[in-house]
Length: 497
Ligand SMILES: [Zn+2]
View (cartoon, rainbow, N blue to C red):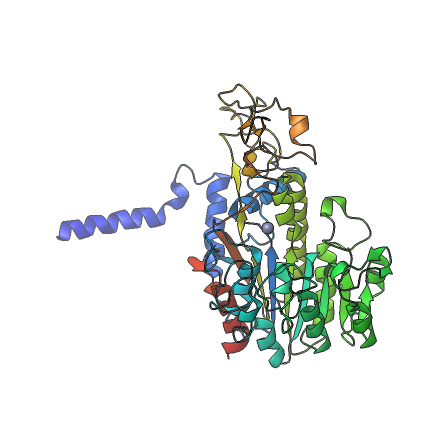
């Protein structure tokens, strides 16, 4: 017994004392690993009450898509990409994995996922902020099933609420900030027989008029103005004759539609602000003209909302990461993903972690996958190049499938880039993979190869990550249900002393 204790102690001593004597101790990897450990040891949980909460959601940016954004941003900055650190991937941020399913869906959609973050409970597929007894597309089940949103809770405390999205303002994620509806597609009208229900644009407008929502910027002009109404090149599309834009201007709202208007905004919080920059969604960052970037809208929202000494809740969405994924076009996914990362960096710069909880997450992942044994620095949108046994960077030779053809690093299990096409013979689809060059694969308009033919690639039920900085960010740990995100925000901003 004595002998065992003595030898165990000796081993422990040798291990503890001799890290710097290990043959690998001078390796950059070893030194960086030690630095990470020191940063983690120095990290102190922040138990301040959160004055401000910023929830930043890149729609569709699951762990896989986020991996692609990391490599793309790193490669754009001249590196190999794999070792790049996104603004929310430093040791300043705590993180957890998030289970995204809906009450009745293994693969979620963005309405109940955003709803779960805004109310603290999971919801049914395609509806927003209604309890589990509500039924999708059944407006008679809205009454009595409305949930209270985080925005409503903190507005009661005197905080201001803002929402920014590159999708339509009436789209699922921005809507979930304040809206309650049995169907996410009732953006400017409700079905016949639903006279007690309000469409999503009307609910957003009502939230601004009542003072619940002070700042809103996104696309979606068409849902706020009636058919035939034109303004700055945008056209209304509401089937009723209601002009929510003119009504909002009538109670003093600053309304803008382009960069000129955006830059002229007075951000002193004396009047509500509404920006609607497109009829439908805002443009992809890759194609963007005459509308502000996500980072610019984030900065404007924070400047505006910071005028309230009682603080604010701001929900920001990079909505078009999801849309480019649905389109099977990885280049636009990643350019919008970089725009999201830049918006996170802007939010970090303009806020103090002592009083502001920033949460970075996604609502769900997509059917994206990463192929092959690629060497370091293979372009994340391009071909998978082989591993160089003697060097670090790939060997420049495309890896081949058993069909003798090269393949890209990233692909989709379903979508518009399917290698199968109708044969013209009944329902049969046939196909083989086409020859592919690096030039074709890295073209910004290229659709990565997919298997199952679908005009719109689908979401997947895979986990996403959540990252957080600021008060009670350390509560994010392990693998959590998506609705727990609300409970962290609630604890940090409402419950904490
Ligand atoms: Zn989607």
